[in-house]
Image (cartoon, rainbow, N blue to C red; front, side):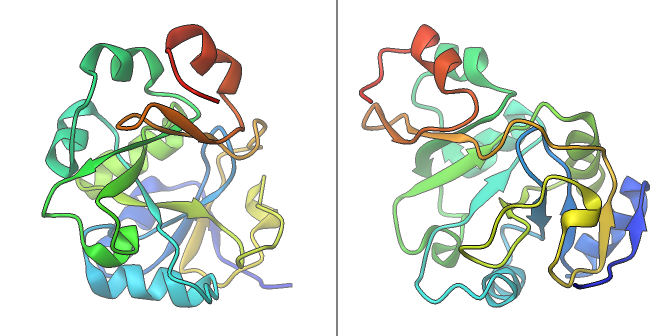
Length: 195
């Protein structure tokens, strides 16, 4: 088991992220790994930490719609405002500012706009999108509490129990659900999406 520094300070964690480090942070779904999402060097660190053997895309997290607009083209603004913030990851066409390494070379980027107040405070404090991938080695069980984070990070923000489980991933460009998870039933009520 890895022993990490556990904190309740989003400022401490934000400063670590700004310094190029990786932190674990709570969301309503699972605990995530946070690093500067638009910096190739920090994305490389996340990939190494998760022991990703294949180039898999990593989502990013934003704390407001203005931040979302800096990284992706909004396909359906009304639908986005119905779905977000919340436990859904949306795939949108990425803008050039998003490094190819983050998206594994794809033209779509996964975006989480969590509703968890600690996650939002962290992203606001960083002032830029951060990575949004589960705080675990690839294929391991996602962490649902600060003490469950069994991966070496600069610090873990204790924001209580993450209760919903992995998010639903929906491709809003092609209007298809990529992965069922938290928020799936809500998505079906709000959108005309193929399952």
